[in-house]
Image (tube, rainbow, N blue to C red; front, top):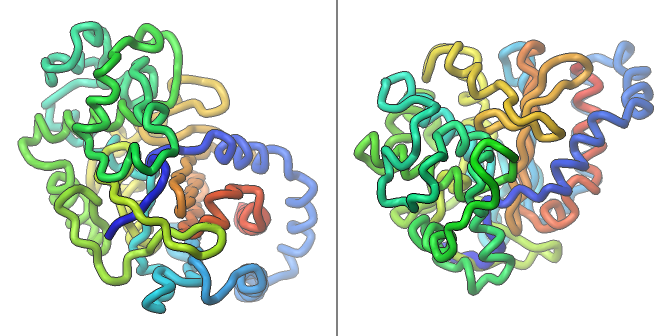
Amino acid sequence: MRYRKRPSTWVAPRHILRAAALLLTSAALFAACDSQGPSETEAEFWARTEAFVTQNMDPEGSGFGFIVIHDSAVAFARGWGMANIATGVPFSPNTPSYIASLTKQFTAVAVLILYERELLTLETPILSILPELPAGWSAITVHHLLTHQSGIPNYTDITGDDPANIDGLTNADALDLVLADPTLDFSPGTSTSYSNTGYLILAMIVERLAEMSYSDFLQENIFEPLGMTSTFVSDESVVYPSNTAQPYDEHNRLYEYSLYTYGPGGIYSTLNDYARWDLALYTNTIIGRSTLELAFTGYTGGADNFGYGWMVGTHRGSKSLRHGGFSTGFLNYVLRVPNKGFTYLFLSNGGVFANDGFDTWTSELMEMILSYYL
């Protein structure tokens, strides 16, 4: 499978900021939806919601799907449009789609598995694990990488949008781009700047300490135990299932590129598989609850307030966890409100979503759902 695109692990700041603003400033719309909620059954709400999405979707164009989990059960899941336009494969809750930077939450848990096994601490200097890295990075710890406080330049800022710069890009290639000038943007721990390179290095740490590939580690420790049978890492060994979502532009033209970086991105998953992951985050199945809380804690403050693989905030007075995942032809977003047992996730494989971000009807859809359940 060959694509051409911008760096897949970039989370567009404008999308995240717009999503946050929508959640904080759309009280009037919430109130309007609330006026319908009490007199509307759940079945009626979902019928209205399905009709809303259907009227906004091209059934023969690129795909979109979402899942809602409430009270530890799937309340609704459906896809619209096409995963593969050429072959007529529809986008469904079982469609493997590129989740881009939603991968970071999996990378963070992989690191926390090693933490529970006492193979590292969160304050372990990364050079003690990867001594081949520049000596000038000696003050950087595992925690700094997880919270985007390392100061290591973001390799996707170097590659830019030119397909020629990222076609066939591997982790080794991406790191080499940064090592060409390894000067840190700031002293570790003194500031915050989103860095895909940091999560790439975390994947290297997983491989070094676990003595296996990142893909095999996730398969053995996360995907298989949770029954995530349609979830996989897109590295150089990948074989794509025939129903894998393809990336399209706003005119339903296929993007062509190859990209093999993983850690900051790299995972393909489905709506139904993600539900298995989401429900496991309430249990001790993968790691202990107290260890998970390390990932769900905000350390950096500000609008993003990074935890480990998450942005931590509040929604209507309750703690929320959120993250976006963007690449050319793919846009994804997840919002969790754990004390309500609520999760909303959407995946999409069309540029009409990725290019417009949250400036589409998908914003209204999310607000409708949040208002009804929260």
